[in-house]
Image 1 (spheres, rainbow, N blue to C red):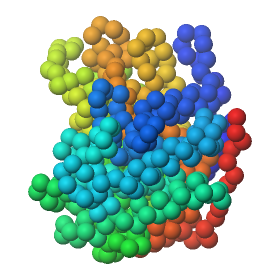
Image 2: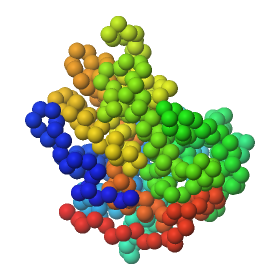
Image 3: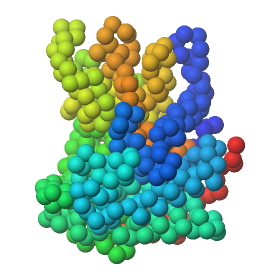
Image 4: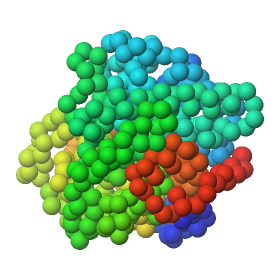
Length: 459
């Protein structure tokens, strides 16, 4: 269900605890706008590449680039950018991707349509000896297709965006990457070839399989979906039966581009739910873990939770309240089985807004109250109230922001508010073909392709 900001399912205001009130609609608007600000401040205007984080001299993450390309249309519709601005940066980005060195050499940008996980912000070539990444390329291509779906005007620049997007999507050689026992390989390196791992079992790779199955020129066989399903493990945790995974990003990333409400593959038909409901249950599991708080971390409660890949105060060994704590740096935190070192990622809960607004909105309010007196806190940053250094809540606060934390906030809030990103992707034939080849049925797949609704009024 699409929900307007004026009909948020909660009280219109909530007390902050110090006499002030928190307007819910404004809180959500500010969270989305601030998250988009990351891409405004950390994008190279010449190439369109986006810094992976605000840490000095960092590379571009191609997943962050895909999120940025998906976010520009939202910014236009919300009045944060003019269409001409968004069109210009999207076109520069797609031109860079199309013209980059795709020879597969150690100092190139990509190979066979795939791109290296990290790219040097100055040269656009491979950074950090990273792998040619199948999963990160899929998020990049999803962003490319999302931009093409939005820029549909009958003029030269927008026609070029659409043509470049089709070129980039069509040249990804998914069949070549599908060489690991019938499943898609994690990646390839020029020094030693394919990596030993492959994508089998529930994860954030659902979107990737849909794109690979729907590819017009390099599609993978339908049997690859069966191989992916072979690794599924159905679990019951805190009374919630679902496909479990600790970090919330696993339950969110594919949903940024695919509306999985009401459509089911054979596995979900056998369980009587869909992947959207599965992510709702995973969200509730995280909240229940915080309520139970088995490791006795400070300030965990029904309205303070959210574990995913995020920055942390470690690596460090400390003693807090008589307990030894091993603090991690950047790590994929999860619940209920960890790892967990007391670090909370507030964007992890915010990005679950479409799944469970009734528990996410109170969490946003509570965390806003926690951090409002912390002079160094930036919205979206992870924090660790257990390791507070005597500062009080929210304790340790990450000094850095990350593209992969900002993108889900922009996209998932918009999917909840208007559904426009989902609606645009429903018109993408590659995605529809892929889902149908994976035997998804029902819901919007049963309806004819629709044009996306008109954009929001410009401000």
